[in-house]
Image (cartoon, rainbow, N blue to C red; front, top):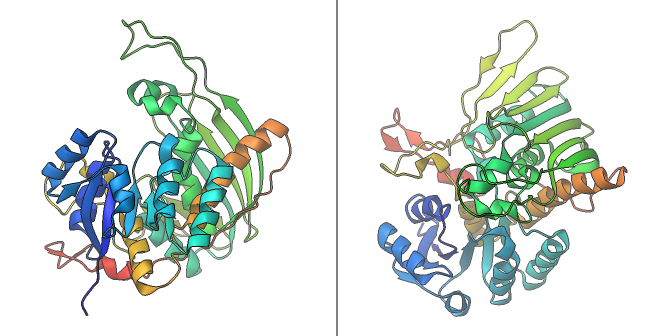
Length: 393
């Protein structure tokens, strides 16, 4: 069967674009990456030459191009809304890096616009489609730990120090819960379903004086806006409860954990900011067992030496949505509903912390698991596998 590829453009050619451009141009049979765009035309041209992409365009040219079906937005979060709206109004399907936008009302408006125009709108993180999270989901769906009763999610970083290296973290969406916590909330939703109630406490980031990159420069102190540490309780639609701790005001010795408790067993899930987090099954009267992956997209670089290979298989969400477009089905994975619900849960934690009341999300989503049994490599890793089949239906 001949595949009619989805003609795709990438808007935003910063650091994260390297892994997207390489993967989208080489990893997925459904994607035809034809165009790059950046507010700095020289940056787009440099990336096009590096990765062999045929052409570069301005943002207006991308919107007007009749031979572009899908736009991948990799700009900074502050301009996601304007780029997504422009492309939707031009009749393009859009997939965007996380977060959706920096404002929940704006995100709701974009979802409404996509619905009105009958267009697909997808949102990262697509690490939830990686081998680690999908294996855990498969084990849960098959009853390996019985009925899920509760979950624990925690991550810490020195987000304040990180904001010296990455200046975009100093603006809205730069706190640890929004920048990194979204991977944990996304994983929880992918594994357990929608959140129906939230209670929380929070603390802001401290005012930060330069200590590393600008210690000897004339730089004013800054404060990342919003709660940089959040402790929250979640109730899921399936009846399970969850505890969340995101601490961006501590040291850089990262400690991450996702533990899913059930009536028959326990699952420990690896780092959701990767594609190959180990999944460990704990059953009564047995030693913990590291489970083999049931799915492909394990984040292992199979495309040759590449400085950004550690970013893994980013782009799966784009390809999954592209298959949904071609097949005429809903994209019930990294969908606009998924992205909106992730954002509302994170914002709901802030609202609950501020008001001292329980926040009840308006949104919900359906996250379907990928088909198991398809892998990224075959014959002992000597040949490319058939993982893309898991994205088709």
